[in-house]
Image (cartoon, rainbow, N blue to C red; front, top):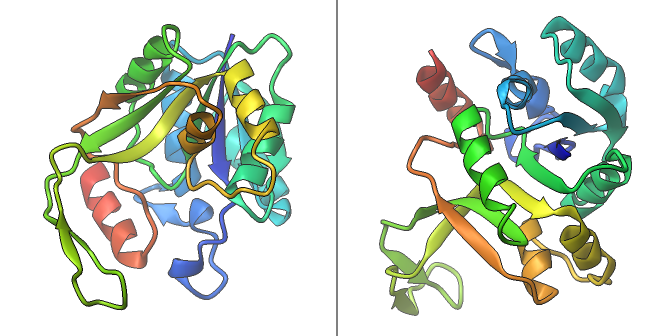
Length: 222
């Protein structure tokens, strides 16, 4: 069984004003609904666990009902850190789950095709992530905005979600994290010594962090 964990419990600090970006309107749906519908339509996903802020539990149930998300297995409150929210999602997975896909609801352009690519790849390797080769010139600044060096970009990738894991590998990685903080779930698996593979994704997969991002995503979804 493959379970998708959709994360929508972030603080949305860069949106300002205590806004919960997961429930902002994007074209004609809440932001979180776009991801829910993509995983609902994927033939490679059996169940969905939605992780939200505690105060959004009732609103989340309304969204799920409104958009007919039949694969929903659970809605659970997240934590103050990403890895706490992932842990809450893992704890809510069906006992028969063998593979888990983790996706940020702030990436509403996800498609069933992207989902399928990582879901199929993780059957052969412990962890997989959507990623895009870096094409911009990258500068490193050791202090402030003063450039220290130009970083060769030929071997650099920008990692996205969805990310997919053999669930036993991800649970082991989280159990061994201790007090370390990771910025994505693949990093936890890397630190635990397991192999991570990247699946190249050149489709738009914008992450909404600002009001301007919301406007761009809206234009791409129309």
